[in-house]
Length: 299
Image 1 (tube, rainbow, N blue to C red):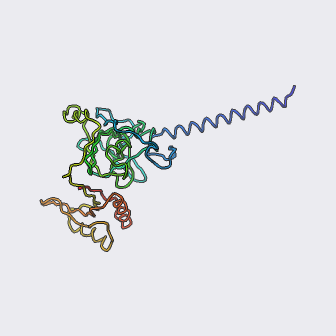
Image 2: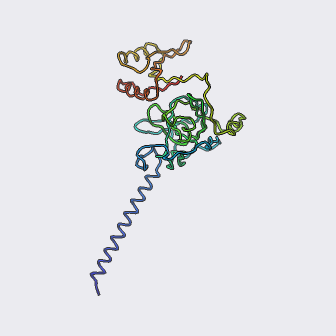
Image 3: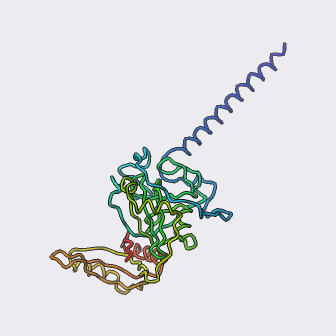
């Protein structure tokens, strides 16, 4: 009887079982980390940087999202949440929401990964990410420079870049004509699915998708500003303006008055600015001066 050989086999078997358990535990931890909700974790993605598809894609047949009544997502709708040290408060309702701002887009890096609502991100469908709108929200997004518009389903959180209002899917950005520059000046208007379903005009738009509206020759081009503050007392606006005296700025620093009644608002703005890149650089300059989080204004 070779007891030494049996003893060695037993030790090897135990070692193999131990290694197998360790490998299983490691794989399980990786899976749980990949599936856990929360802000985007760059370690989940194969690409270090985002990009457009590597081959040309025909998006002419991609249709707008069709608004429909849906329950709020079980995920992505906390009362508030933190990203990069900043707290965001989720809106209780999208009713009446309408705002202008800067749109960006996201593509291949996130394609197929889970969104904040739990749905997989599909860059070839009409969807978007927003910091505060309830998930899901259907919204019409209009390019203020060329008049094109699309309807998207907001099912994700973001963008968390300064000065950005909405992050569009690759398909939505292509339809709006903002892929080349990477950003665009847009207006975002939430859609009530119940009203949309009963609206004849909206049904006509849906029937004629995809929409390729062209800008009118008389369309006034939008102007981009950064608003540093709004005050009920002009003296406070003057003090803020004085903080930037002697600073070389990429646009005119002015105080404008809104309202003619007994309670006017005095707004401190810089602009018009040449483009989004100028607005981003100015935001960093203002931060160095102690003026943080200026508001993007498009007139």
